[in-house]
Image (cartoon, rainbow, N blue to C red; front, side, top):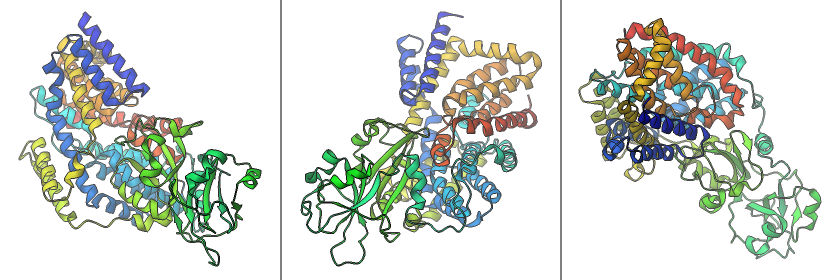
Amino acid sequence: MTLEIGMVFAILAATIVLFVSDRLRLDVTALLALLALVLSGILTPAEATAGFGDTTVLLIAALFVVGDGLLQTGVAEALGRWLGRIAGASELRILVTTMLVVAPLSAFISSTGTVAIMLPVVVTVARRAGVSPSKLLIPMGYAALIGGMLTLIGTPPNIVASEALVAAGRAPFGFFSFTPIGALVLGVAVVLLASVGRRLLPARVEPVARGQPRSDQQPLSELIRAYGVEGALTRLRVPPASPLIGRSIAESELTTRFGVTVLAIHAWPPGRAQPGPAQPVSAATRFAAGDLLEVQLRDTQGERLATLPGLDPVPPATSLHPDAGLLLLEVALTPRSRYIGQSVIEADVRNRFGVHVLGVQRLGKLLDGDYAHTPLRFGDTLLVAGPAATLAPLVRAQRYYGDFVVATVPEELEEAEAQQLAPRWPLAVAIVLLMLSVMATSLLPTVVAALLAALALVLTGCVRLSTVYTRMSWESLVLIAAMLPLATALQKTGGAELIATALVGSFGSFGPLALMGGVFLLTSVLSQFISNTATAVLIMPIALQAASRLGVAPEPLLMAAAIAASTAFATPVASPVNTLVLAPGGYRFTDYARAGVPLQVLVLALCLVVVPLLFPF
């Protein structure tokens, strides 16, 4: 091993450690690796920045815009609502239908975007059928990952594999080259999860009994317990002689002196039989006689209520119209959220959205202490409270997979949240179908077809130009562009050949089939801890070198590696998809391995049988 190879391996190892530790964003870690390669003299500045002009990066950027066209015109959500209508009330039928709808959708838009759309749909379907969401959300996530195996554009690893073939002077994979294998994997996954898999996935979230009426408090009880605010939410009323009348919330010092946070106010003048609907509040909101306050108590001891100046406790039996009360909403930060790295205070959630954050969970565990000043991470779930008038537009604004995913939409908001198809939806569908036809027939290079489709969607108004750059997943693009030079460094220094030699030495003596199995295992293990895109960028040149050393065609090895990169089934941090369903499903770390490892073994066996038949050595 030369000094240069050793330096590349050291940079690679440090990069993987940082990826796994999650101390830095993925794109920041990749940029640090890129700079390390330049400063060490292994790569020239031109070699280090070549990834930013690579066709892979341009293709994925264009596909983000194409997927956004299906989101903004309501086509993707319409499919979700269609699922809700046809799924029925049987757990088995819901599971199978969900997987068969989610996988094809994920073949054309990102798996994370697919889950963002389908998550509240599946939770709602489960609730209405009296089924635990825990039985459905991991299968939905797996289906989204498998959907990436169905087409060339389904997931970045497929594109990376195809481009690696081109770089080696061979014909690229076709648009439907992945489809037979992906369809078989989907079939195997459906059969496994619909049979023994149903026993492997526990009902972590209790189902709502079918036909059970939803009272004012019952739908909120699980969320209240999970976020540790049980007993902290109550109602107070401003009596006619209260000294608070005419004073603002800030002037009352309720929060600073007494630990009482006012979440919403119902106007209830003396003489009116019922309070009005909940209204959002700010520090400047002023109290009026008879106001009914929805509050959160810092000290949940009941005797403290008697010491509050000018406020009377309200009997728990006081009823409100279902649409008039305070609603709770659980949301999860997406990978592209603007608020990653900011605290709740820095994000100014209260003033920006008119809601209050009652608690924060990270990987399913409640953040103790001063969560309001803790920097937020991708996948963190927040319990927010607000009136329906505030939450309805908030849910609509985040429908397109923006800053966060709405995990569960309350029944009171379901009708308000439902989106109608935009007038231009037929045009968006026509453009996407034309793009797919051009790709499938190879009339134009794939990247050109994708760029033309993206531009057409913008020019026709199917995608708003103002959102193109703000909604682009820059972290993913920078990650790919910055990781490609690391693959270049492995090839340039001979590191890829060294790893390939070790693979061939370990597995090659048993034949090309064993070598393909070794490539699959290496890729699959790495994809459990670092992104599948980064894994693919690292593995593809190694697979090419291994095929060359053994004297076999590289196509089966690259195909196996691409499939393996999408088998991120075994850990909640293996993919953004897994992280997004963690909290709504109430899952534990081991739940993913119990269902995911058997599926990975089956996919490996399937690849060993099918891939050589479709792509001979």
